[in-house]
Length: 398
Image (tube, rainbow, N blue to C red; front, side, top):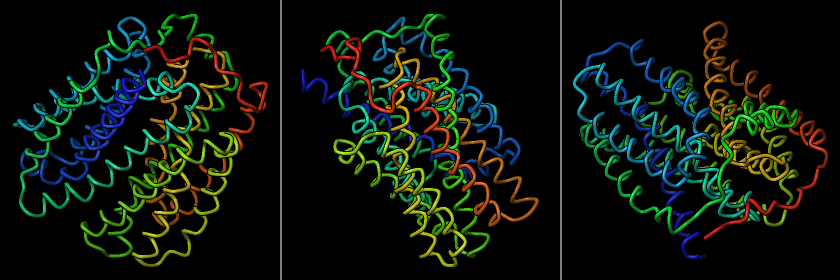
């Protein structure tokens, strides 16, 4: 049973990796794709907007599918859909076919975003915080390796289409690496309207969700705008901008890897509060950055501090709130995902009106100071600052 659980966890980590690689590939390959398919920047912007809208819709309805068909079956289907989307994207001949393929990829990754976190909660109910950080470490690993690896492949003349074909093969291999849902039976999800109403009626859910919104927003702001800042203000090439931006992902990878050990000794509440306050303090140091090396060190430290927040807030909420964990984690993602893009949008507005440097020293610190405030209030309203005993329905069944 332990081997089966370990295998499921490892394959889930690889699923997070291909999810990350698929997401970062479009930003690295966009210039080449735009040139080959001959579409405008406005049309390119539709990719992100439409896929984000699609992802939000899928996140809301995925608990129903998970309850009806089971998490493993839905996740394997999502990987097959992602495989098809990646392959057909590599064969795109114009903007319309590329958009359809991107929406297909979005359908796959939305279900992966929804179910990978709850699956880890089901597999390790007594060690959720540590295991959640360990699995989420695969996201920055994919971002870091994608920024450097895909950038290098394009620089030596490899066509972007081959990158997407390789990713589709990788996703397919991961799909068939999952054990059969007949061999590994996870606790059933509650996809009823009553379960959803129960979650939405909890004030702590909204406060934890908002703290995740602002934490995700800060993470998204650094991931989206750092490379642009490097090219505009430090006058570095796109290649060096990618390498320096990768230091943020590297910090997150190391941070989440370390958190998987730290959370076995430190309470989840303390880890979240310390990490969020440390992130706020470090963000204020941006004003002193004036070189590529200084920015790389700053981004690495920011990644290290922010690493704990997203996965640990989700695992903490699932542990103390007496509701269906699968639906809860999915609905919390509905805060994190728009937070990721909202902060980037606000940064762009401030950057246009004032200066991108001003956006970095104002928007991000404001987002980060709200994280510990909202989280602490949520803990108070939940009735107990300590973890409640795990419920029997969360025990792993193998």
